[in-house]
Amino acid sequence: MRRLPGPAPASVRPPAYVPWLYLRPAHQALQEWPAGEVLHFFLEDETHTVAQLAVYLSADGHAARSPGRAPFGAVQTAPNLPESALQAFLEAAESALQARGVRHIMLRPHAFAYEPAASARLTTVLGRLGYAVGPVEINSYLPLSLDFEAHLHPSERRRLRKCERYGLRFEQEPPLLLPLAYEFLRRCREEKGQELSMSLEQLQALFRALPRQTLLFSVRDAAGEWAAVSVVIEVRPDVLYSFYPASPLAYNHLSPVVLLTAGLHAFGRASGMRLLDLGTSMLPDGPNASLLRFKRHLGAVSGLKLTFSKELGEEGLKGR
Image (tube, rainbow, N blue to C red; front, side, top):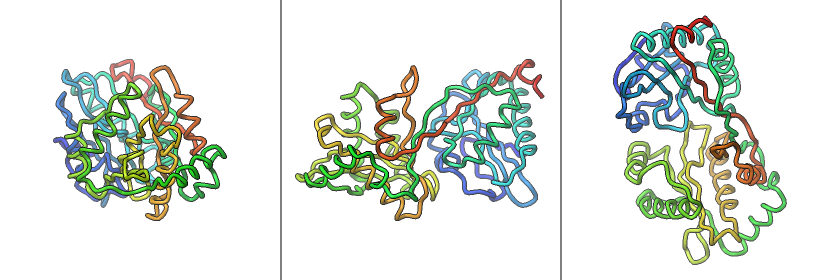
């Protein structure tokens, strides 16, 4: 195992997998972790990096988490990495963290839909190492191999037709409109009593650093006004994530997010992708039933997104 310091070092040996965007140095450099130290662990064979883990320490150094500031982090591995090697890698990382005074670790990997076999392997190994599971989140996604309209609920198909009759159209927007789009998103969230998790400056930095992976899409009405907007992220060349979808309450009678999702589905499918991630549907006290129902009406499939945690004191290491 190799451990590298710094906020965003690249692996020394080339990875034996295509790294998720949030595990690449270009994104890690944007995660702005002023609290404490950032540590990067890499597992290598003779020629390649076969696993990686970045952990972000609290200011007092007693807690570690992955990701820092991203939708997910934790471990990514080569597809054929044995469970025994993954377990040894995690044990070595835990030992290194405990030697630095870390007492608690939290890992939030990607949703199961991204790589089901890898998620199952990681869940098995973390369970063996004594990690607790929670929270359990419900993730929704559209398999892009399936026809979008054929899997719409009849009510959403009617709304899609209504959008078309009213002259609404799906568009990809240039990044120079990001300030206006951000204000649009902020107002939409404000109407629902919600806040954006990123500032405009952070979002602009993301678009500048990763221009090919960060995209802006909209639905405009017949007068050219925005009826819906979404910031979209290419998490990997085969996975698209609708990060910030929003529409004003004034357009609820048209439900332009249906047309927005249809456009993203078509874009992802034409780009050779396999999955459109619609995100989680959670409230502080459990699943957001109405949002989950809406996504299911869009044809989305539900899956799990798990968070794991463990105490790294002597009691936490007894399970070995």
